[in-house]
Image (cartoon, rainbow, N blue to C red; front, side):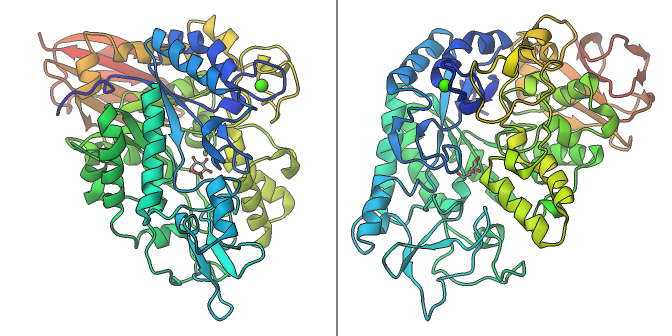
Amino acid sequence: MEQKWWHNKTAYQIYPKSFYDSNGDGIGDIKGILEKLDYLKELGIDILWISPVYLSPCADQGYDIADYYQIDPQFGTMEDMDTLLAEAKKRDMHVLMDLVVNHCSDEHEWFKKACEDPDGEYGKFFYMEKAKDGKLPCNWRSYFGGPVWEQVPGTDYYYLHVFHKKQPDFNWENPKLRESIYRMINWWLEKGLAGFRIDAIINIKKPLPFRDYPANREDGLCDMGQVLADARGIGEFLGEMRDRTFKLHDAFTVGEVFNEKEEELPDFIGENGYFSSMFDFRQTVEGKSPLGWYDCRKPEPEDYKRCCFESQRRSEGVGYLANIIENHDEPRGVSHYLPDGARNERGKKLLAVMYFMLKGIPFIYQGQELGMENTVFKSIDEVDDVGSKDEYRRCLEVGYSEEEALKIINHYSRDNARTPFQWNGEDNAGFTKGRPWLAVNPDYPDINAEEQMGRKDSVYAIYRALISLRRNPVYENTVVYGKTEPVLSGEKDIMAYVRRGEDQDILVVGNFDGRDREISLETIEGCKGKVTLLINNCEDFTMDNQRLILNPYQAVVIAYDRF
Ligand code: GLC
Ligand code: CA
C-alpha cells in the first residue's frame, strides 16, 4: 500500500466550546486552543480535528452553520483562526475542521432565500415539497425525533431536515449546490487546512422519490437507518467531491460513516477512496437500538473484542480506519466499555492500550487522555443536548419513570463528553474564570491534567507512551503497517493480538477479567526472538517461557525481534 503523510500520525479531537475559555465568558474559544497548543504538542499530537466554530445559532452546538466563511463570535475571529493555523504549522501540527454539508442552519442566507421563494434558485438547494392530500411527503423520522418535514412559514411547502428542524438538508442532486460547496471547501484548504472530518455524510444521498417506509414505532414514522440502507449512488457525489477538492490538496479526510456495506469499504477508504479514512463505529453501535436509548445494551468485553477484530479484518489490505473509544456524540469510553470493577486507572489504561495499538489512525477525544468519565446529571434541566432531551421524552413515552429515564440519560447522553476539560484542581477545573456553559464534572479534583502530568503512572502518561511508541523508529513500521492477527480467541475476557512486522512481532494482551489469569503463549505463531516489554499498566510483569500471568485488568505490549 502506498505510504501517505498521515499514516503514522496521532489525531486529537477538540470540542472547542469545552476545551479552554480564554476570556472568562464560560465558553471555550479559539484563543483557548492557542493557549493549549503546547499541551497537545507535548502529548505528541500531530493532527487536530476542531469541531465546528463557524457562525452558528448553535441549535446543535455548531453543527448548524449559518455561514461557512465566518467564525462565530463566541469562538473568536477569522484572525484567531489564521493565527491558530500558523501556530499549529510552526509546531508541525495539522489542523482539520469539521465539514458539515449534509445540512446548514435555517439561519443560513441560502435557506432564508429558499423560504422566500421555494420554487426559485435557492429553493432548489434544499428539499421543498408540498403536502399531498394533507399528508407529508414521507414518514421518515428525524434523528432528534419527530417527522423530517417542517412547514415553511406562510406557505404550503415543507422542507426536509433529517436532524433538528433548524438544520435543513441540502439537495445534493442539484449540481449548483454541489459547486457552491466545493468552492467553500477549496477556500478553506487554500487557507492552509490539512483536511476535514466529514460530518453525517452518509445522509447526503436520499432514496428518491420520497415514499413511506414501514414504521418502526407507534408514531408511524420510520428510522433513518432503514431509509438510508435503500439509497443508491452516493459514490457519484463523494467521488466528485474528492476529485474537485480534497485530491487537489492532498488533504486528509476522515468520514463519519455509519452503515456502509462491507463491499463498499474499498470505495470509501481504499486506494483513491472517497476519504483518507473513516471512523470505526463497530464498537460504538454495538448494543444500540433503533427504538431508543432505553433499549440499548452496554457492550461486554467479549463484544468489544469481537467488534475490534471484525473491523481490523475487514479493513486489512483495504485502507485505514480511524480508531476511537469516544467522541462528542458518545458517552465517555471508559464509562461505556469497561466492566464495573475496571473503572479505575488501571482499567482505563487497559482500554487505552487495546484500542491504540490496533492498526489504523488513533483519534483521542479531549479528556480521554486523562480517563475523564461520564458526569452526573441530577435533573434533565442540567442537560443541554437536543438529542438527549428527545431520548428522555422517549423514555417517559414508553413508560419509564422520570428517575429511570434520568438514569438512562446519565449513561448515554452526549453531554457526558461535552463537560469542560479538566485542566487542574482549581475552580471549574481551571477551564474558565467565569461560569461554564455546561457544569464541570464534579470529579475534577481527582481527574485533571495538572495532577496527571506530574505523575509517572497516570492515564495521561500511558497515552504519551503509546503515542511515542507509534513514532519510535524501531517499532513504527510494525505499529503503523503491521497486520493485526487476533490470538488466544478462546480465552474469555482476554483480548490479545499480534501486529506482524517485517522482522518483528508485537504482542498486545489485555485482561478484562477481575481475576488473575494465567495464559499460555505456546499456540501463538511467531513471537520468537529478543523480548522487549514496551508498555505495561502494572508495576509487575510475570512471564516465563511461554507462560504469562496477568493481574486483573493488566495490559502489556511486548515486542519480539527476530534478529
Ligand atoms: C454528526 C455530529 C453530531 C451532529 C450531527 C448533525 O453526527 O457528530 O454532533 O449532531 O452530525 O450535524
Ligand atoms: Ca470564551
